Amino acid sequence: MREVLNVSHLVAAIVYSALGLSVFCVFFQVVDKLTPYDLWQELVQKQNRALATVVGSFALGLSIIIAASLIG
Image (cartoon, rainbow, N blue to C red; front, side):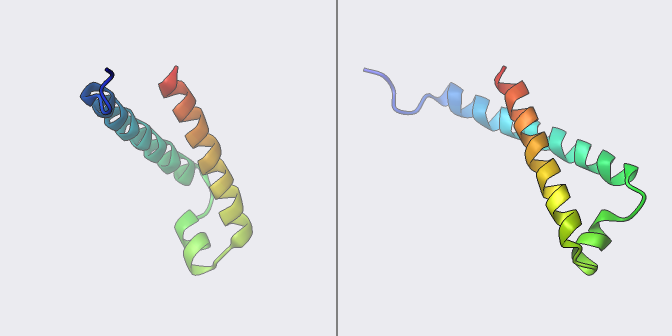
């Protein structure tokens, strides 16, 4: 009978999740540095919804790419 929870799969999922999150954070910081304005000020203080939509779409796209690359 198969195990319900295989510890090696759980550890691999945690490691790959941490790796994907760290790669995402690094690339997001790079994009923040490349933009000519402060993303945080535009998003939070000025509440620029158009920029928030673009940044959110970028984040989803980057997350999908990182997940696909980690899965193989």
